[in-house]
Image 1 (cartoon, rainbow, N blue to C red):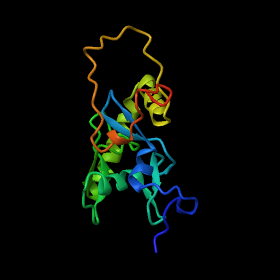
Image 2: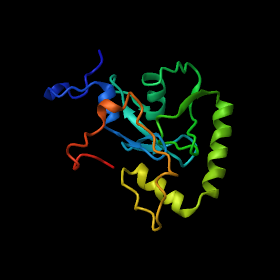
Image 3: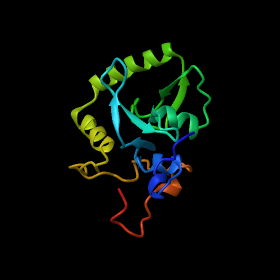
Image 4: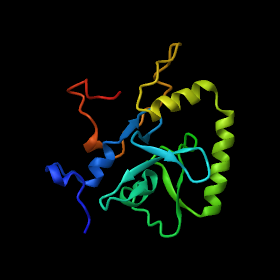
Length: 170
């Protein structure tokens, strides 16, 4: 029998709600980033989100997202990252089914792209992945030139309201 998370103290929350509480939307990239617990992936040093599902099993956050949010039937396939702003292992919005060979090629591409990133880009992704608002740029930004994305529909019900600005992460 599946153990209900938090049922012992009467605070059961559906898995999607618990999952969304560990995510943060980045309006400049359109990514939903995992800010919950992480662990190193098998065989590499990249950090991957970890989530305890309704059965009490630890699963990768991007894999849970692919199946339960995006409706991708993975079967034997792997959940790969297809983030348009460079593969990010903590992005749970841009995922796709991949073969192991495709996934290994993507890891190689991610490592090469990371080596070419500027230190400012690396710092921004670090801040965002930790749930910290990155420092504003030191120069004036033309806000018309920066695209701002709307949050995905599945995530909107879980976003903080702007009525109480203390709860709003951005």
